[in-house]
Length: 197
Image (tube, rainbow, N blue to C red):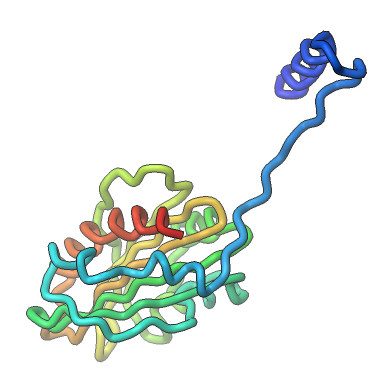
């Protein structure tokens, strides 16, 4: 049906003045090219976090949280790290560019990715219910428990970029219900921040 629509459009356009009678070319758009320096524009700022705690910036680095799940390094990447000083939990936000970011996030849903997100010996559980995310190709959330750290995370893909939010801390300070609520509140903020890139 799509081929027919393209052919019909070509025939209609060929009747317009100044055309040669050949079908109109089909225009395709390439995915946006990102650089690690450009992705830093989507990093959380203090104002993004004030609704969930008292944020203290810990820095931005050229790293990726999902590279182990993708099986390759992203084209571009950045991780920002914050501490919520009132609750003593860490907020990690990653923005990474892959050729198939939506496929990567959809793949997280298809199986429990223990090794790529948890490391060895981690326990996995279902993550928080995420709010409706606008213009997102795929999203997924999870929670995890390891010996010295536990928390929740979520990933949301748009085109060839994925944003990840993790909220974690020691088992005494990072109760999973709390971490899940913070993740659910911050994922829409991280998605909106993609508009800064």
